[in-house]
Picture (cartoon, rainbow, N blue to C red):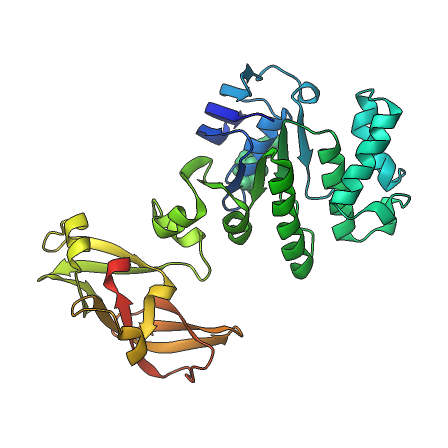
Amino acid sequence: MANVRLEDIKRKFNNVTAIEDISFEIPDGEFWVLVGPSGCGKSTILRTIAGLESATSGKLFIGDFLVNNIPARQRDVAMVFQNYALYPHMTVAQNIAFGLQMRSFDPKTIQDRVLTVARSLSLEHLLDRKPKQLSGGQQQRVALGRAIAREPQVFLLDEPLSNLDAQLRDDTRAELKQLHQKLGITTIYVTHDQVEAMTLADKIVVLNNGRIQQIGDPQSIYARPANRMVATFLGSPPMNILPSKFQDNAFDVGGQLLPVADDIRLLLKPQQGQGFDLGIRPEHIYLNEPPRRQGHQEGELGELEVEVKVVEPLGRETLIRGSLVGSSGVLVNVQAGADVRLRSGDRLTLELDMHQL
Ligand code: ADP
């Protein structure tokens, strides 16, 4: 096992800069997730760590060793790809054993390792099958098994769940987390799926346009996003962004006034006429229901009137998308209970927890 350190890594493809200013250090044994929209540079970072790409500039350390010029095979990392990349003519057992044979392990060790890995991934009964006789989920477990068998110092996973259907993806995600808890191998996981990032990561690295936007544990990134991109990328439904102007001691959102809570006033020190994009998560906006108001003092809740545009029942809750009355185009997402009875066109007053901006 090893820590992984990137110092100011940059990678250019001809004139295009795919990633730049990439610096972070992953402590030994942690599970980090690189997340961001397609094309933001996640795979380029992972492939650079694996040795499948070389950095244009910057330093990459695995353990205490500078590995920029060390070939992929000698880096002691294992990578799992989205498309599994299993050898089709080999059985499951042979696929898992392959990396060990290439490294000239003795047959007894290989046999023992294959069995241990197969057991930990519930693959024992499939050892004699060929990949095409397996489901997608089983193939992915074999790919994981092949990577684990080598007991690498670092485990790299590039969108490993994206070819699985929804239920299997959830199950495999939970298995991956358990596996990491058991093995404790330093893991770097690439995904564009913010749910995977939130549920798996010790730390999340949010990327956009080839640059790091924020690094932190899932809860703190969710609660205190560093910028608008992070705020709207993590969380489903995304954070609401309300354009406003500070006027006469209130935030004016399209003609509707929101009070400024004391802690927010201290933080922002707003000036008359200054513009603010107010970010508020859907779970901090309430329908005008008396029970939700309990525990809130005068001035802590702000009211906004919206017209309901879309009502989406999600089983456990209902997502309401409303449009702010009086200001064209500003949409507000609200999570409400399962039992709300609203229809498109209804007018309603929302209450915003003004501490949660
Ligand atoms: P992600 O994994 O986040 O989808 P990538 O790391 O694959 O993003 O790509 C980042 C950027 O680098 C993209 O703009 C992509 O087009 C570019 N890129 C990646 N690989 C190459 C390559 N081999 N040649 C040219 N451009 C590339």
